[in-house]
Length: 312
Image (cartoon, rainbow, N blue to C red; front, top):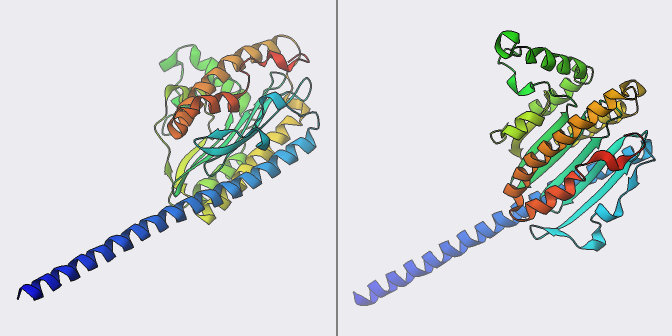
């Protein structure tokens, strides 16, 4: 009987060891699959982003690489332990591009940020995808160049009037009217296609005060599984978003008249870029801990647009 008991116990131990081994193997396999999924998603997004940047450089040949503010492969910069590349550009004067940042963090982040100088009222572009585990956070926005209190929109699509906000309501309404020429039905269709194409998508994190102040009316902020189909939908939407920005940028009708309008735009942009910096700092710090500070500073570029020159 004792021999049988010892034998049974030995079999139980063997089975337990096998189960633990299988579980560990499964966990390791899942971990490897998640890493492969992250790398594959960022590779796809990064390749598409680089193609978009090449298209922009071809259309605006005045854009020049800012080597001292770029992180090229040979610089060996790492964020969160991952290889990181950032190509920074600007185009002084008439082209009116104050800052363009194409940022890639291996297996984690693909971001295209464009700030315009104050010679036009064209929206800035923010196009960012963070991949964590098997999910991705998608952020896409054409940031308005005037404060229209977009965060106060009501469920029925209207905004507070003078009976609620006093005379300020007229200023906000005027700012929204000046930006309506950009937020067209075609652009709304781009957003709608992305939102309906993303399977399993859910809203992003709750908005901070700075996020509310800086977002445009068509901003996309969603978390979705990093599936092949979802990644493809995001690639298409990001390309369309950049195409819209490029079309505006090349259209002279969006240029401000010299003088007061340019100065007013400069004053607004300077404060707005500081708010955008603060909002981005919270995002990158949550994703990359202590490295979030240097990543935010690098991706945001100079907060003072005076360096652009050429009347901008």
